[in-house]
Structure formats: C-alpha cells, structure tokens
Length: 403
View: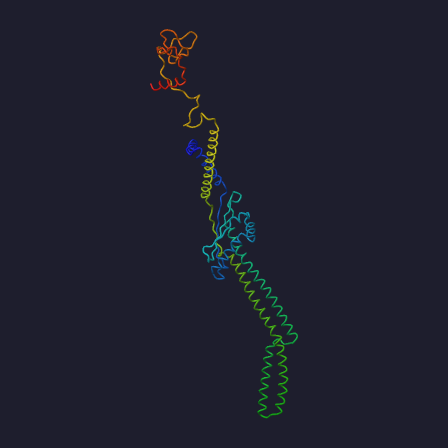
C-alpha cells in the first residue's frame, strides 16, 4: 500500500473522519458541563504568631509550611466537616494555602467545594474561616501546652523550695538567717571597737568584760553563719522556682492571648468568590477527546487498508497484478485484418471446410490450370507442397495490421 492509497481512502470517508472526533469532543464537553458546579471561598489571615515573634523570612517560611500541613490534618478537617456538614474528602481536596511573599505574615486560604444536595451552595465561607482559625489555634496549641507544663513544673519546684524554707524556720527558729548574721556581725564589730577603747583607757575591768562578751558574740555569730550556709542554697532554690514560675505564667498568658487573637474579627477576613467557570476544563478535555478520536479513526483506516492490500496480494496472477502487467494468453486478442473479398475465398467443396486461398495445399494436384496447388498458378513440377507454416497466420495478421 502506498501513501496515495491511504490518502485516497481517507478522502472517500472524510466526513466520517471529521464527524466522529467532533461528536466525541461534544460528548465529553457536554459531560463535563453537566457535572456539579464548583464554588470557591477565600480567607486571609494576618498571623499573630509571626507578628509577635518578629517578621523574618525563616520564621514566616517555617510557619507557612507548618500551616499547609496542619490545614489538611486530623486536627482541623473532622471539626470543620462536622460543623459545616461538608465531607472530609472534599475538604482535604479543596483546601489550600499560600503566602504572597516568603517573609510575609499574611496567609491566603482557598476552599473549593460542590453544591450541597443540588439545592444550595455549601457554607464555604464559614468553613474556610473556621479552618483558618482552627489551623492557627492548632499551631499555637503546643505553645500553650508547653507553657502550661512549665507553670506546673515551676509550681512544683516552688512548693518544694518553700517547704524546705519552712522546715528550716521550724528547726532553727530563724526566719531571716542573713539578717541575723549581719546584725550579729555588727554587734561583734562594735564590741571589738569598745574593747580597743577600753584598752586605750587602761580600763582593765571593762577589758575583761568585753573580752567575755566578744567571745559569746563570736560564738553566736559562728552559729548564725552555719545556719546561713544551710539557708542560702534553700533561698537560691526558692528564688529560681519563683523566676521559673513567673516565666511560665508569662508564657502561658502569651499563648492564651495568641489563641484569643486568632479568633478576633480582624485576624481572619473571608470572602465568597462564587461559582467557578468550567470553560477551560471543557475546552481542554474536549480537545483531548477530539485528538484521541481522530487518531483512532486514522489508525482504523490504516489497518483496513493494510488488510485490503494483503488480500489483493493473495489473489492469483493475471487480473489483479497492476496496471503494467501482461494479460493472460486466454485474454489476449489479436488485431483483426480487413474482411476477405469473394475473389480471395476458394470454392467450397461439398461437406468440406472452405480452403484458405492463402495457405498451401497438403497434396500435389495434377489438374490442369491448378499449377502447384498453392494458388499462385505456378507448377512446382510435382514437388511436395510447402507444409503449413505456423507463423503464416501471425505474419498475415501483422500484414493486415500494417495495411
């Protein structure tokens, strides 16, 4: 099969080659157009977590990546699906988020959904707002949990340190060892100063009294020093527990405020985009259907032509061998010469076939005037007549063709 045979076959059914792809494109486009319409709602959120920690590209990028993961997680999807009666599969497929710039604290959330039972659109506006708020709360929730755990731990440490201080007071009856140690140290210094004055005044009696008093005061100072050494670590633990408790309480308040800010009216703004156009999908899938149907038709025509060509090659030689093949001998015809005149035809003998005047007789004739019997009036002298020449007829036919 040659290319012109293939093109000739296409030209014979050109209307079918065009009609079937067009019908396929129309069917696919109509099917897509009959599918339920899609609606879109959008929400924009100014993320308080990024703003509170200072806007940086790394922090914003990390938060945006976390936001995408949490948006389609089990922390958000089931809650929104149950609240707004939207299938979870549609929420997972329809929710998406992005940021305008890498370091932006503004996140855009889109939700695409179908009609609800074919009567009214779903509450996509409320759903996208709820999903945005729940996502931010889910991201802030670990921070609140961590701050709450810190508060609990700090409270435990504080209680333990305070208990140790109370036990110290009960044992030593000294609520302020540092103050008592400092006061006793001042008393000892004063007594020593008085001793020096008595020595200068040569007041031996007072010197003896002051030496005894200083001895007692120094012993009491040593006792207070020992108590102070025991109390100082307890006091340090109590101070650290108080600092940890204050820090944990501050973190807890910040986390609670962050969650409360997520639900504030100005944090998330939502808008209803409306029904989405199907024109692009219709054109795309209709074009695909048209191309596939066209290729299938051309392939089918090619297969049929190859099968037809194979059948022609299997037929016997003689009738279907091409334009330049010789016809079989039975079908060949010779060119007919001009009709013979009556003078050329010999006299017919009774019951015998008329003799061809141009062919020699097979037996010699003795009749006068017959000559040698070859019809030319010449005597061959009794010689045997010429045998019929098999080539005479073709030559005569050729002769008549030349005339």
